Amino acid sequence: AQSVAQPEDQVNVAEGNPLTVKCTYSVSGNPYLFWYVQYPNRGLQFLLKYITGDNLVKGSYGFEAEFNKSQTSFHLKKPSALVSDSALYFCAVRDRLDSNYQLIWGAGTKLIIKP
Amino acid sequence: KAGVTQTPRYLIKTRGQQVTLSCSPISGHRSVSWYQQTPGQGLQFLFEYFSETQRNKGNFPGRFSGRQFSNSRSEMNVSTLELGDSALYLCASSFGEGYSYEQYFGPGTRLTVT
Image 1 (cartoon, chains in turn red, green):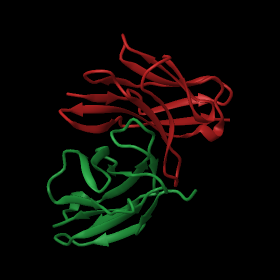
Image 2 (cartoon, chains in turn green, yellow; image 1 turned 30 degrees about the vertical axis):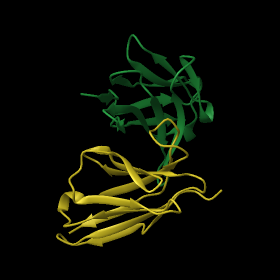
Image 3 (tube, chains in turn brown, yellow; image 1 turned 90 degrees about the vertical axis):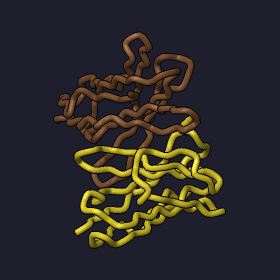
């Protein structure tokens, strides 16, 4: 079955330190991968996507993600965390069954950046 | 550009009733997707509409249905409500269909079934 795993429910990082939010996937064919962020009392917002091309993808707010085909991973990273990065982060992968597409979402990782 | 709007923002219904939720996409976007978000199940895909046609569908029962109008606005209907339907229902619009493009989400409709 197609799936997305975010192995950490919560990640704690000190402000100024690098952060990584992990995502692994299982999907047949070439994956379309996405990261979204949900701030408190605000809607889900798109951060970045990988469809093809360079394995390192740059997105909004200084975030980037690295696609690793051999490890089936798409980890989200940022060199220097800000307190304002505290939010809920979701990884998603496009799944295709026959001619039906859908996005499969991870359970989400709560990122807490401490001053 | 105005964002995705959803109405109503909050709704309380009784078991057995039906409910209709509305979503207005970003101008120029022709794809509208619906999701259910709950603490236990997370984000689950309901369906996607593009050019007034349902193009993709998740694994929800037939009680959940939708439609899209010529102006790309979409409605979602849930009939014979169950307690388990209590959730945040999110609508997202996108330029194209099939999830190659990023989606823009509305604030959601919080549905409580009593």
